[in-house]
Length: 397
Picture (cartoon, rainbow, N blue to C red):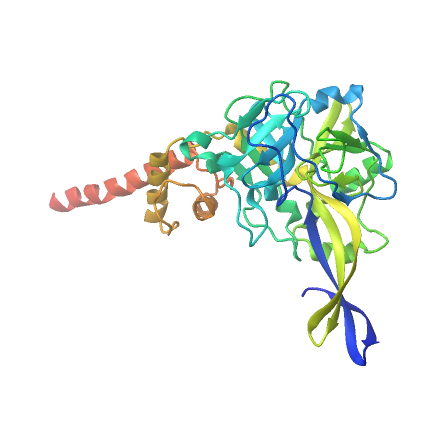
């Protein structure tokens, strides 16, 4: 167990140690009942009262009329089969952003199928569900871009890789997308101190699947129960980590952390989970008793971690057929980068192979199975095939 001894005591004549360990608790609805596979008028997901992190007084309130335009760009992303419910928000007419663990789960867990997910913008008012692009042809996973497909919730915690973009089967974000703004975390701390940072999300324990506003949201580096030097050791890439005190409940993972900008609300991060220090009493090397955990803060990944990836995802033309993906797999295998089965499916192994090729070629690393990558690989293979033929003609002459 990662942690540190907090003190010693005696229990029943046997020496015990209280040990503290850090972890991230996802604020998704994974593992519990979610929205129905079909949404009709009057239907709503089953709700369960499971608040995740409320700091002091619960400040969540209904979204006011002045933020109705923002409300129109936020929705539920859920998989009834995968029993997962999260918040997601529009960043383009056919692209939504959310937390990566909503789609991939965490390390060691079996991920749900991308084709099973549905996005329902402004769920309570519209009930206009849309699936992920490629869901009908088995290519839905190709239309997801994320910081990682396997995320650790134990130190080093992967909170700053816990983001994802999803291309929808049709342009369901008819009101457009929320603007994304990159700010250093130090400036976000200052903006929060001025009362300009807030969150809008769905919560299982709030009024039945209605969006809620949480403000004011504090943002800090150090907290009473843990200072930044300790916190930074618990996270991978902590430079883009936002620790905040927006009140949250289950299903708020993937919600936007927002800033009152000069032209309206701007996305400065994506809410991903709650940072806790758990404590257990150890006896003879085994857990004798679990003590009450300390909730330090909620976590968000700052937009600096994903803004450039969003631009690449918007521009990418994703391969649309299994035959094209098989061709891509074969070309990468020819370069010794892909060792999996050429089965026409996109998964972590193919993603890693594409990333390795992009790095070797000095390209922006996306891991996307795009037409541009296929064309570039094909051109390279063609040039390699022509070279021996030319050499052979020169030898004969």
